[in-house]
Amino acid sequence: MKYDKSIISRLGTMLAVALFALVSFTSCSDDDEKTPLQMPTISQDGQTVSSLAFHWDPVADATQYAYELVDAFDHVITADVTQATSLVATGLKANTEYTLKVWAFTALNSDKTTSPIAVLKATTSQQVPLVSVSSATTANGNGGVTVTWPAVEHASGYRYSLDTGVSGTTTTNSVTLIGLELGQRTITIVAYSDDDTYSDSEPFQFTFERVRNVLWRHTGTYTMKNLPDGENKFEAEIVAYDDGTYSIENPYGAVGYSINFMIEMNDKNEYEMRPYGYPLESGFNIVNVTSVLELDMFCSDGHSFFYADETGSKGNLWFWAILYDANGQVGAGAYDEFEWGWEENGEANDLVGTYTATCTGYDYFGEEYTKQDVKRTDEVLVRQIDDTHIKLINFYGWNDENIGEVDKLSRTITFKPATWGTYYTFASANSETEPVIAHYDDDFNITFENFTAWYGGNAFIYTDCVMKRK
Image 1: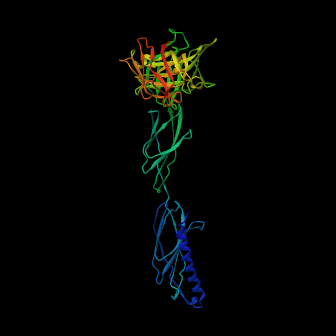
Image 2: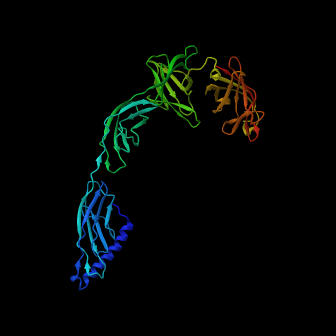
């Protein structure tokens, strides 16, 4: 029990005065002849679970009263000297007995002396336990499980804890639990009240099943770049679940096989894939996609991409993959792709693929940044971001991403000036604030005729580039 320091200080001073007065009375030879004041008569006025109320009748010739409230161990809970004839003691323990001691004293020059001590025992009320929660229901959706139970009368809120160690409070009679693994979970619910008249309810335990609900599913085309053209496209299905996971069902046309993954945003504000449930070896997730084919997926550090519109009706993804069969590696590794929901003649979708980019001319990236002739060939990836935007990966051999907007009517791709190669600005050779505009033909070959890398007001590239799709 904590006491108010100011009260204790004041009490000490006043009791010292009272004690001095009492000693003064008893030290005088006439004190033995003085008549004690009448002993106060104490009455209890009421109680709660944390308070007791008392009053005592005024005593004739008394100028002040001293009181102490002590517990069963004679520890002083509160004490004071007062001219009042009532006391309300708060902050007490429920269902606990306390003893109030009151005595009266008068002025030093009175012909009376201190009264005998009056004593009264009183007990605080017992708390009323809240009714325990008796039932609950669950609903799966919105990425989690919502547990709901009947409201408990007089409850201010509910404490809950899961067998996973997660705990919390809620002021409503329901809670939505996010990020639960699939399978059985047990929740414990306790009702509590801010009114100290009521104590916590008995715990209620409820076991439920966390299952995945399908948000949407769509059929699309899975392309395995390690297999020969004409043999590398398979009809497959992508499924999105309410726990934030996805799966590509039958990626190689093999019924019963799937690629399971989650998505998370990288430091470029793009969504990357995170496979789960597979062995991990040297950064690769090892997935069996048929009874004889093993797919090694590497999705980190910009080696995967995921896009789906708000309804999931169309989207695309890609990731770095190496394919193995019983005899060893099949192909050298490439980006597997899965697309769904795009129109056959869609704008950005038309340009997706792997290109051979041939650039001829000159640049100033030679020794001491001197002019040198250029004829270089690079493999460039074109990936779709949304309906009208693509990005180039490894253009001019730099591991950067150049994002362009596709205009199907004019057959152009517009690249706004952006940082390129860490230090440079990818922009038109005319001005570092002018966008680069590339053109593509009926075969979706892309031509760049007027781009450069700007730095410090100087242009460092003067070449033409033609990208032909493999």
